[in-house]
Image 1: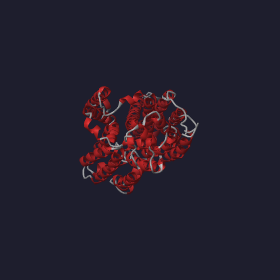
Image 2: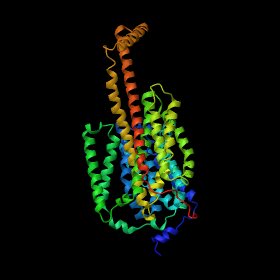
Image 3: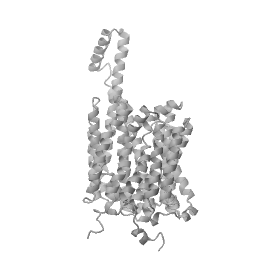
Image 4: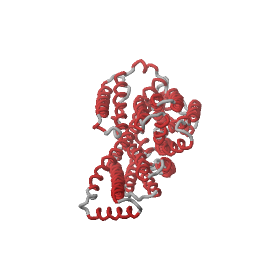
Length: 526
């Protein structure tokens, strides 16, 4: 029987405890996911230390996301060429080395280059982790296994801003990269010791002789330009910028060209035939929406707290921490429920709770306190806790072992692109709707409005009583009303963003019913 024989693959079982393997590979993925958000709060410190502007420093985020997005869809092919374990360990070690180089960077150009390399090697970690779990656990145990994975996927992005803020304030921004050194080395050693390749995941050098160069080039062009468009769009005013228009066009041409080419290529670098599988196609779409509401909300809440309520970056990060703890406590419960309830009903319930949670968040006012914001975020994350593991199990349930590498790569790509789209959309909604509300509210700040003129006169008299001249009092009073106009219109913009996020979560609920399959039964069941 050959190494890749299906019968051999079906009989294969790892020699180490599957739960130990799950913890080891999740630790490596946790490090990579954390790095997507931990840098955010350190940007002002990076800009000051490397003598660059705040706008220039954001390229440390964009460069990482672009490189990460390019590698994700082809990581399944790379695993097949080099062997999954060898590819996984190589990615961990290279990611760790690039993290150290990022911390040692002496200027912004060096940091951006090292972040590109970090993103390239980091892009292979999440798909490899998921594919390893698919081969390690039988179908009836995958629900609980993916609950462990959710620690990296759901909690790491939430903890990133808090941890990054604490490290930056207590030590230096460079330590947000140096901290990966011990974690990465330990993860690589553990993976080498406990992880094994099943017959279907061993190296196949023959695949390297049939490299799909057009497919690779089109994927790199399309997804790379898409990430630049999404990450820089709000900064550069979207299609008002010639730079964004060019990258948006290149993104469309690259993605459209990739789809056409991969559909007709003999040995495509990405197998789009997987989307003929209903569960896989619907699951990837649900994961896209899930990631959009997860990452979009994780950006909205701390951003609003800092810009509108004067929170420090550390305190804004702490807004998300209680919700992350609630999600962590829910994951074991969800894992047990998956042995009794079909995944589609858990997913349906999760999106319902997420939608209602965002509607609760839309009830905020300019006077809300820390406790209210924490409760609103917890309400959303209760639903998020019911989404990741059931979607993962439902999406991969009907894939063969030979399809695990490619399926995991496309699934994680859907999640990461969904997160980028979610962040771009909610930030654009806040900016656009804030302008709309400002135009509406400013109509009430007119000398023709008696309520406004009375309030302005009262404020002017108060300032004159404090020793200001009449001219100074008039200017300061008008400035106070203008600042309040900006604050209230911005808060209303965030309210709209929360409302639209809730509507998106509810609209996707009917798709959950398209998922086939019931509860996974153990092999001993009749």
